[in-house]
Image 1: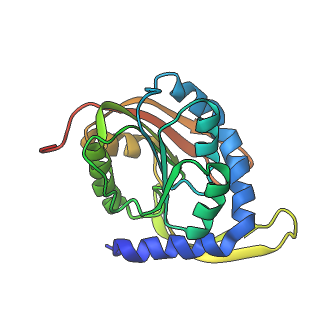
Image 2: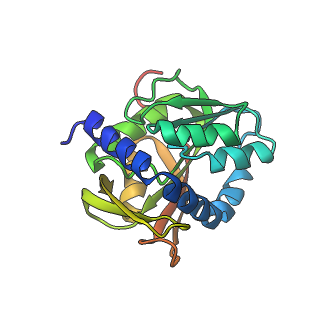
Amino acid sequence: MLPAPYLSQLAEKAFHYFGNGYTKTAKRHFEKIRPFIDKFLLSVNRQGKILDIGCGPGFLLEYLASRGFESLLGIDVSEAELREAQKRVPTHQLLKENFHRLNFYPKEFSTIFAINSLQYTTKQALDEVLKKINKIINLKGRLFIVLPEGSEERITEETYVDPETKERRQHAVYHSYYTQEEIVSKLKNAGFTVISSERLADPLFTRPLIIVSAQKSAPLGRE
């Protein structure tokens, strides 16, 4: 299995390299996913602490703040993306951290989002990441995950086109793709009950997206 630090470095370099082109792409992606987020938020504890894993330029955090959620924390491996996020949510906490570590207190969060972030590691490593998420989320806490559909995992050349300059940029990044059945099984093994699992296909995406809402149903080991 490829080491976690190497995978995190690949992702950090890629998002730094893509720069402005990625930020604008991320905004359009967020708008497509937002109706699913709105439905998910109906069951979210508004008083609890929310973690955004792979917050990128901060579009989700900005939206949550506009909806009145006050206790927000975003993490990302890219300093460039965190600087962008800071512009959108200057009063909320942002940390440079990768999801292989998740060094937080047990049951610190009531809700966790991971939108288009957990695919940047191996499928084997994702099992461990989900166990760490189980540890830091409350019992009955809610989890919202978005992953690209597929079955393979590999290092790929990812391409972004700057919307203004039309410049094409490529960089190597690790990708894992999942079927609905596969991610549902992984969540169940990590102590979560899946509430909903949906598929979103749109010309904007190179692949359909799997959108999953889950709830922590059981702790794993001691908490």
